[in-house]
Image (cartoon, rainbow, N blue to C red; front, top):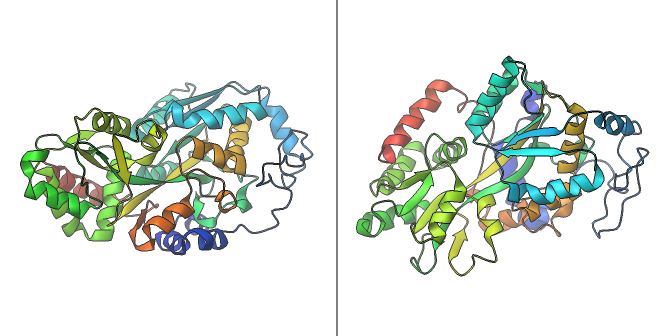
Length: 394
């Protein structure tokens, strides 16, 4: 029951997002006193008993034991789905606080992450200390296998309840998936999937072949976007719209970065369900060519899960990073790296924040990922994947 209560509820998340910027901050306000935490104005926080500058006073008095134990551990190994560009501000800030911890963060495909972990752990080979990915079906399998080292973060009561996906599984960021386009080549872009489908049907020659891009159906993030968007639209209608797009033989990718590169190069006119973390860091440099927008008939929101693994060889260093990521400073660092912060107490400082997303697109157009039990059902999941593959013209 405890794990069930901590799962991300789509209804609860939408309810929290519905009220937009100011209301979101109030709705997501953490329980307990926040005085003594990192200052919103940027002033240094009062050190906790652990004695490391910048630690909030609400950290436990024995936190220094975790810090000291981390000094004896090997480098921190992370399997993630974020690029080095996304990670850079986070690692820089974390190393300023814990200079002795070397961080190795890999940029992998979601499916590869779990397969690699299982193979390495079975062979007693060094594997990930932390996993960060957005694959709701494989996360549920990972949890059922008992592979999560359950750790209650020192920041646990400072983050909203919906962000605690399961015991020991926290949300790193809440990132939109967007439509992108080449501004000079497509001056009147679609702002919804329905509009894109209509454009593809009305002028197929303009978009055929390969002038539209999206994730292939085998990509975990892309599949989840289609899954949750189709649940919102109704699966039959969703697949009909995707089939109209699929007739143009879209260029299917496993990487959002390649979608953006192709659009900037003029090889692609428009892409949909593109992860914003590969889009936002391109600005302002790409502003003259690259356009993007939230999706008016359903913006998928990636709830990017994070957990320490059962086979972690640097568990204390991992705990320090989890706490840093969930802290005000960590959330602001992710925002600088192109991810979308969600802690309500940084809404006025973050470059990208969930409150702004909620205010811009509206409750009815948010489609958050969740630990939906249906997506973990292999029969239902693979049936939809097969139908999606056909709709995409594969």
